[in-house]
Each structure stands twice: as C-alpha cells, then as structure tokens.
Length: 133
Image 1 (cartoon, helix red, strand yellow):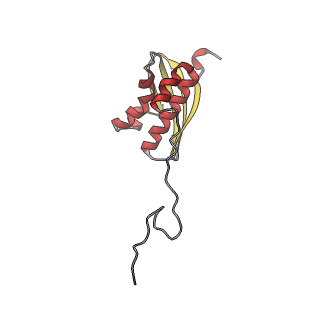
Image 2: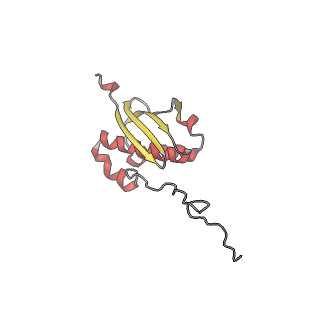
Image 3: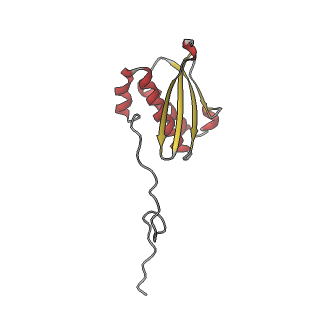
C-alpha cells in the first residue's frame, strides 16, 4: 500500500451522533463530510469552528484530507462528534499531540444526553400541574 493512500481511522460520538473519521496526510487541508464540503454541510460558522477546533488546539503544521461519515443526532451534536473523532485520529497519528488535546477536553466523550421519559410524567421530569380537587 502506498504511503499517500494510508489513512488513520477513528470514531467520535456525542449524544446520538456517530462520526467515522479518516485523516490522510495531504498537501492541503480539506474536509469532506457525507460527500459535501465543510461549508456546505455546516453553513453556520460556529459549527465550522467546532469541527476545526482539534487542529487549532494542536497547531499542527501538517495538512490532512479529512473524510467523515456522520449520522444521527442534531447538527450541533454531529459537529461535536466530528471534533471528538478528529482528536482521536490525531492522537493515533502523533502521540505527542495527546496532552494538548486532552487539556482542551476534546478526547473525552461528552456523556450528556437526553434523559428518557418516565411514565406518568409529560417529559423526563416535567409533571402535570397539581390540583387540589
């Protein structure tokens, strides 16, 4: 297998979103998310910053072609899942990047998710209004 075709796989998760990330060393930085560019898939600038956050945290000089398949969850959860997957792939690529990614909190899978609805309640914790009669 040629050096240019080797990729580093990783999986990132957040809420119900799962992102399969592959980073490949390349001549320039490109993102392909579900066969769309970063700007097409995430039109909101804040989500684009979240996706790029792992690379800005390590300030790496290397450029990568980042190929991502993401499904489930909402748009914000998908952006966080991609950030988590990229951070994991970068630690596989270079173990020396781990401390900066860990201190930024990008290697921890955020455990917060929607709480299930309980019987007798309207939502997870919302109760019907109490009436005396």
